[in-house]
Amino acid sequence: AQFILNYRLENEDIILLLLALAPQLSPSFLNNIITEFLPNGGEFAEFGGIKGKNHRGILPTAETALYILYGNDIEERLKGIDYIQTESFLFKNKILVLEAVPMGEPKMSGRILIDEEYLAKITTGAILKPQLSQEFPASLIETNMEWDDLVLKKKTIQEIKEIEVWLKHNETLMNDWNMRSIIKPGFRVMFYGPPGTGKTLTAGLLGKYTNKDVYRIDLSMVVSKYIGETEKNLSSLFDKAINKDWILFFDEADSIFGKRTNVRDAHDKYANQEVSYLLQRIEAHPGLVILASNFKNNIDTAFTRRFQSIIEFQIPSHAERLRLWKNNLPKEIPLEETLSLESLSRKYGITGANIVNIVQYACLKTLASGKHVIKEAYIIEGIKKEYAKEGKTL
Figure 1 (cartoon, one colour):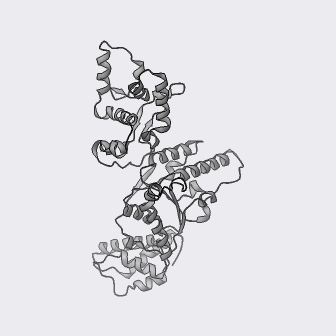
Figure 2 (tube, helix red, strand yellow):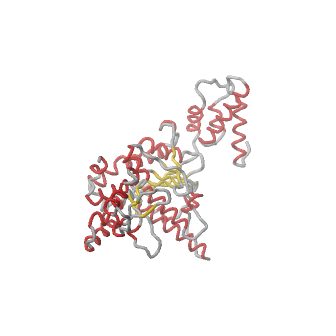
Figure 3 (tube, one colour):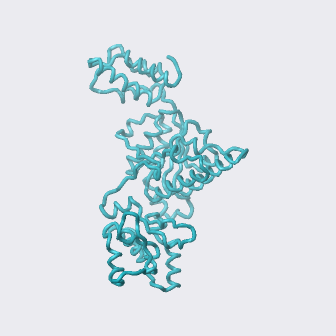
């Protein structure tokens, strides 16, 4: 009831919503109605509805809603079809969807399906968070860190704060200030810079401090070698994310947002079509979309022109590395007297992610040794391991 009041649903949408909920709450509800009018059995084609594979009751279709609302009045039913396809708040916002039907069958014979997250919210009050799957190729990013743990250059921090301002005030700008007809929906941002410089952590913190879920898209599950499958996967992802107030984070975005190429063969043609399709979906998405890349120039300029913000994440300076060492080393465990964080910060140009890995290695070595002092040798060994991973030597 609170959901209906909050969204000021029209009568037609209330009927559609209740029909979608009926099998979830009272499996025999629609069967009992039909049995009352057809006690000896028989078909009631006008009422619509189908049988499921597991569910033993009637699953409502759009035909069921049309019959309940308009009976057999053809003119009113046509208006009802138009309402479902173009006006319904629930269908426009993907709270309800109409199941696709086999070619040649009436479109309105598709089942009315309710989004799983909204079903949980309406029936239990709990917010169900989708899990990584082929149908939803994204995983939730969460962090226990705070803004103070994010060590970046002042200019970068200021640009990130601009995103936070948009997240907090966009609804007021678009609705209360009536800017919806002037400003395009959504906010598109690019993070670029070397790995380990804080791009993913920044996305997580933006979500944490604005109470929004951040989903990192698994591009290996999105991109397909089969023609049309990548677009299908992207469509499914954006359809699910629309009006959910999520932040979408495309890490290592080069693989799908890369520059379009000259068409030499069919593969190039379809790869370019994927980029073009993605451009359309991102531009129409009403939420925050963050693309992360190691190199700015790897991203197609058609995307970069449409970004509200392009933020560089640089290798930390000496002073920033010193803060990272101090922030990440355990406060309760003393350091060997010869170990100088000042010297480490000046000598080794590494990233925050490198430092976290080195600290973990040194802490584990300390525990294994049975000592209670972090030795300089363990830190140096950890640095050597990080350099070796990147093909570098001390």
